[in-house]
Image (cartoon, rainbow, N blue to C red; front, side, top):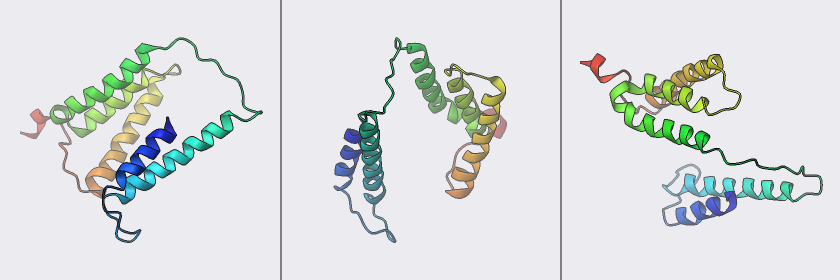
Length: 140
């Protein structure tokens, strides 16, 4: 799967101008990201086919986990405008953490707070993106 997705992204990225490492074009980053993903997939494939690889079994598929993770991302997408970046990111992390078999409220809250701070530093301060930070009712 990683090889196919990475290869597909790399091939599709060649449709855009590549540029160079010092002046990257729109196709430069997706191309190299696809290459790295394909190489990682090849490493996983080769290590799984090794004679020393452990045999694993997969139990029944848990749709609850799938729904929790995808549902929390969809909720984030709808909630961002109304709840703001801080609350939306925190809820995204906590709701998706509930899907883990080792769920812990303290760890989920700590991860949520860290990712709120990281999102602010990376996206608001670093990239200068404009997101509502607090709920819409508080900003009026």
